[in-house]
Image 1 (cartoon, helix red, strand yellow):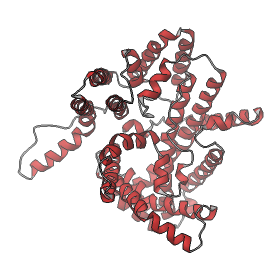
Image 2 (cartoon, helix red, strand yellow):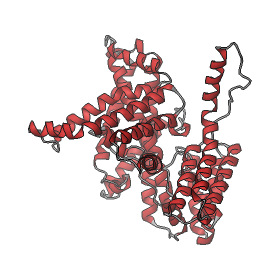
Image 3 (tube, helix red, strand yellow):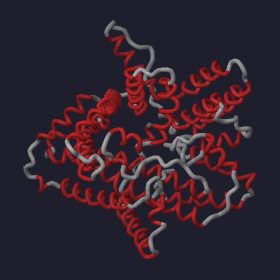
Image 4 (cartoon, one colour):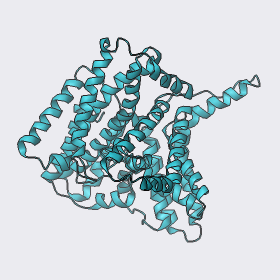
Length: 478
């Protein structure tokens, strides 16, 4: 049941109708039932994995809270066991293939074969939520949830189950227990976010994917300027695809009176540094890694080199989390090195620019910093999109191709139209207040502007959805 489908809108309407007709004491069970049905519509067999993970985290949380002298032992055991399904399903084939290649060197065959099964959808996201739950209980930030059905809903809540945001138990569980009334403001804000997310997905992300697939399939025969824009679109495609999912998830939850984490800054792609970029990109994941990986590793050290090493390790994990390919590993390592370089040179750069009389807060400097950061980061997109460094380098080499017959190619027209649509998105994004969502912009417009925007977005969605094959969200794979 895709987020961008009539079936989902019907499902959401039925869920909201039942939710508001039922008394508060039955609403958690109703949402849990809807969440299970939603997951069953994707992968029925893997609902068992989610159930086992939920029961394990629930039990470990109670055990850690009730233990006086062995809390740390129970925490380590719980984290290890909760990670096992994620590590097995996501990396078994990668490890097994490497093992088989190793045995070939000794003229031996591996007794194990790769498995063709699908990775359970959302396994990274509900695993991270389970780990944060037991870790917060260990730290004393949270008391164990007494109601299994409430905790199960925290784990399986259908707007977040497939690709986040990664919610903290203290925030989401409190909202699940708080009675809410039917609110026109929540309904309007939720539908506005869903509409904005559908626009970014159908009109922008899916269009860019078609263009990128054509270029990445044969970069050596493509004009260099189109290769450049394919790399540019790789950044925007990932943003539009994933932030679209997050907008629809946040909008769906808002209809039930639940506020989810804002997962992306609206113009994160215009960040003047890689550090600021990562502060606004997939905020629920970077915040999770900061709180449950980087800070525990760095708590007892003031050695700057050790802190940089920990930072590099975190972003290497980000790369590996995205997938067990050399391209993702290189992408994560490059991000880690860039962030270390920015942190290590920050004081010196500030001193140099100050002596030169450069206003580092001015528009001109920020525009230059954005262009520099964005274009230096473009090669990273090649490593993210391809499976091996060799493929990435081959794509990047296409930048040197001749631009003869550029105007005669259909891709040029598609590229120009996509750029216009991206500029329209950016125009709207500039007007969304900081730390707010699209609804904060749309809801403050006069009625004729607001309804004109609804009509325009709806017509664009219908125009590009009709006749086009529905594309799944990228982060379903992660």
